[in-house]
Structures are given as C-alpha cells and as structure tokens.
Image 1 (cartoon, rainbow, N blue to C red):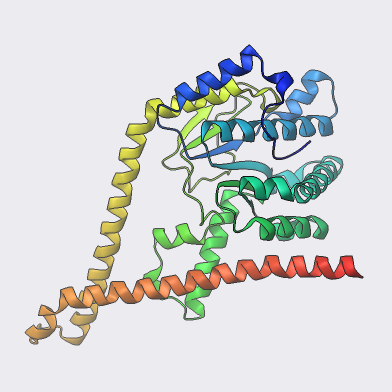
Image 2: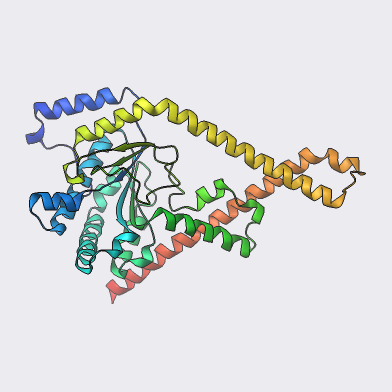
Length: 347
C-alpha cells in the first residue's frame, strides 16, 4: 500500500464521497490546524478483536495512516507528525520487535519507490528519533528518504521512530552542553528558546492539535515539550478503525478551543521574550557591578541600553552559528548513511 494516495478513483466518487467533500469544505470555513500529531494506538487490540496476529494489526495501522494523510491533505492540514515506534517498544517480545522492524523495512523501501509521488506533492519526509538504535539497512533507507525530500515544502510528514520525548529533550540538553564546552555558545545563551531549536522537531511549528486513539488518556512520552499549547483530543476508537469523521470531530474540538489556546500560546511567547530581554539586562548590570561596584563611572551606567542591545546582537549571532553547526552535524549523519548505501549498491 502506498504512503501517498492520489485522488479518489472514479468508482469511489459516490454520493457519500461527495458528502464527505462537502463536510470538509464546511470545516475549512473555520480555523484549520496546520500541524496535527497522532498517537496511533490500538493496533494490537484491533488484531485481538479481529482474531488476527499482531503483525496484521500493525499492517492495518499503516494502511490507516496512508488514508489519514490523504484526509489531512483534503482538509488543508499540511503537516502531520505520527508516533510510529517508541524506544520503549524495544522492550516488547523479540518476535514482535522483529516483526515491527520488518514492516518498517518494507514501508521505508516502499517510500523510496514512491519518489515521483512524493516530489509531485512536495512532501518533505522527516524521521525523528534515535536512528542509531535501528538496524543499519533501515537507517540507510530513512536517510535516503530524508535527503531525497529535504527541499520539499508543500507538506511535511514527521515519523517519530525509535523516539521518546524524554530522550529528545535530554539529547537537546546534551547538544547545548557540548556547544558550551566547545565555546560555540555561552552558558548565559542557554534558554527555553534555544532548547526549542535543539529538538528533533526544530524545523516544525508545535502541533496545534494532538489526537490519541484507543481510549487511553495520556501522551506516552510523545511531544511532551511541544504539546504544551496543543489542543488534545482523546478518542475511544482503535487506530485501524479511525475514520474521516473521527478526524472531523477532532478538528471541530480544535475549532471550539482555538481562541483560548492561541491566547495562552501568545501570552507565553510574550513572557518568554520578556524573560530573555530581562536576562540580557541582568547580565549587563552584573558585569558593570563587577567593574564599578560603587557606580562612580556614570558614563558606563548610562550606556546600559546600548550594552544590552549589543549583548542581544552578539548572543543572537552565537546562537545562530551554533544552530547552523547543529544542522550541519545532523545533515552529515544522513549524508554519510546515504553515501555508504550507494557504495554498497555499487559493490
């Protein structure tokens, strides 16, 4: 089954399909979340319910993902993030983990075969997580898909694979600590905003809507940092049974809460900017107090606003250079995997 589904075939262009399109157009008269995250839970329970083995349940879950991506595209949702495989899933039985890895191997290989459709729709594929935990051949397929689509900007699919939010946050902290150790940034440059830009999701906006299926009411270590101001929608339906109408219900829930959540997000962003400016001011004042504790040199103290602006400019430059270094480091990791794969194919 394809990752990218094309337009509805003629034999499906029934009255129900037309009604679905009508409802989608009605929904689009209100605010539509531009980034939706899904915790695709319930594949195993669906398999038990239908008398299937677990692998079949996971395959049905993938089929539903492909279908859901098309619904999102129809609604004007141009970024989707899915929780495909948690680091905690490695603790499952060896048989199930191997089965999941084999499904991933097949699906990422299929993704590469669909290059034409991916480029046609301008889809940028990002796989987020600790890729080094995965078998090398899957790492290489992932890297090839990411490098192939990195310049696409019409739609974004983020697949969280070998991922937990705690690992993502701790990795971001390690990246900042390494930046300080190497002299790329100062300890005073470390901030909430900088941590944002060190996460795997640094090139994506925070999700506006987060949907979890299966009736569980928890985030299971998924996008904990990024979902602080997301509308959360918990649904009883198992993921393989998720429908267009469930997606509509989640979007309606988002629309009902849109104004309140946007006000809270805007207020938080303003407070964060104010805190950053205050930190710059406090840093400049602390340096002046060390140089002139008795405040005898009034010219120095009169220049505080100028020094604060200089501090902001220098900090922004350091942070920008550090983030460029981090992007290059991550890009090089992917490029090296692709090059090794090309060498292997040629040999």
